[in-house]
Each structure stands twice: as structure tokens, then as C-alpha cells.
Amino acid sequence: MCRKPVCGSCLWYAESGERLCPEDAAIWRASGRTVFPPERYAEGIPHSEASSAAPVPDQAPYRGNSVDVTALVATAIGLSGIASCFGLAYAIPFVAFALGLIGWLQAKDSINPGRTRLLSGVGMASGGVFLLGGFLFVTLCLACFILSLAAPGNRTVTFGASTPTPFFFVTPTP
Image (cartoon, rainbow, N blue to C red):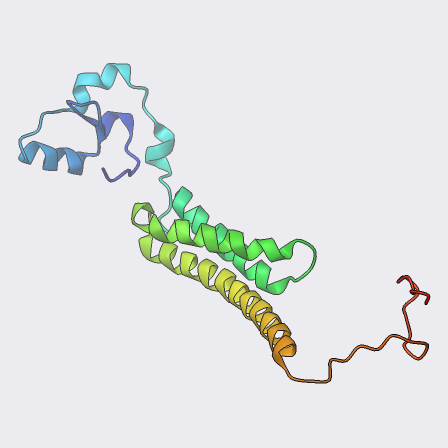
């Protein structure tokens, strides 16, 4: 099914009820399937002058389905996650990566699979870069903490008058 706009007087029908353009109807007839010509239902079909007079332009700024929109949203969220580091912005890369992955896995169902894979890849990459940076930062902090515990040093603790005690700790009295 090509989904191109066809006026009611040119619309063919398959036996299963599917609507066909004249080119698809010819292909179906050549393959031996039953199709019905427009004249069979012409009286009951209101003619659509809008679709035949002004068809959808081929060069629309953005044409797509829900999978394409998912990839576009993943890209927008991923790039905004890299650009912002305030408040709850740390959660944005998770959403960008997840939506990009969904778009990538379902790209075959989109109108333009190449564009969908590109946008999904940008969404996953931008979210992934932010997540990788956060993971490396946490790993570095943990490594520094573990190394500071393992480093040899003078670990004697003295209690006495010369040891200052912060005001919020109770000072033991002898």
C-alpha cells in the first residue's frame, strides 16, 4: 500500500476491503487477486476535491510517524541533557538513551528508516556520553576513596587537651 492520496472516483478496492490506488490495483490484478473498480462504489463515495486538487507536497519540512517522532524527541532530550546540568537534568540522558534505543530498534517501521536511525543514534550517543561521564566520575571518586583507605600512613589517634573537637561532638571528660 503506497498511501498516496487518491480521489474517490479513482479509488479501487480489494476483496478484503483495502483501498488501492490505480497502480497498486493493476499490480494486484496482475497477481490474480480480486479487486473492484471505482465504478462499483462510485455512487456511494463522496468525491474528495481537496485531495485531488491539492495533494500533500513531497518536500514537507518533516514527515514521519510515531517512530520518527520518538527518534526526534530522543535527539532533543539528549542534546538538552548535555547542555544543562542543573536540577533534575541528570535524569534527561536516561530518557534520551531509552527513547533513542526504542527508535533505533523500531526504525524499520518508520517512514524514513535512515533518518530515524541517525536521530536515534544522536539521542543514544548524547545521552550515553553524559551517562558515561557520570559513571567515570563516580568510579574515580570511589577509586580515590579506596586508595585513601589503603594508603599507609600515621593512623594514631590521640585524645587530650591538644586535640580540637568540633562543637557538635560530645567531648568525653576524664
